[in-house]
Length: 76
Image (cartoon, rainbow, N blue to C red; front, side, top):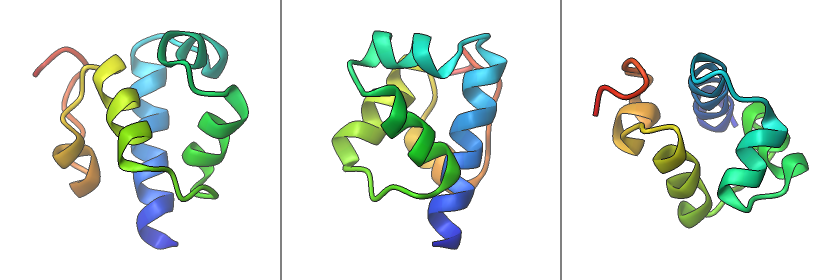
């Protein structure tokens, strides 16, 4: 659970840095807004595909997000 919470918190920060609401991110990724909320709270066992789609939209490297090494959006 700790890992999911940390990963979700990183995604939340990246999304906010990108100036996106959860609803906007949901529309861009095709992922339900409620699922994005669960991921950000660490309450979801999201698939690798789902996490990759979010990371891609946020222009983030999933490996860095997993390690908590959040780089600036667009730094990839």
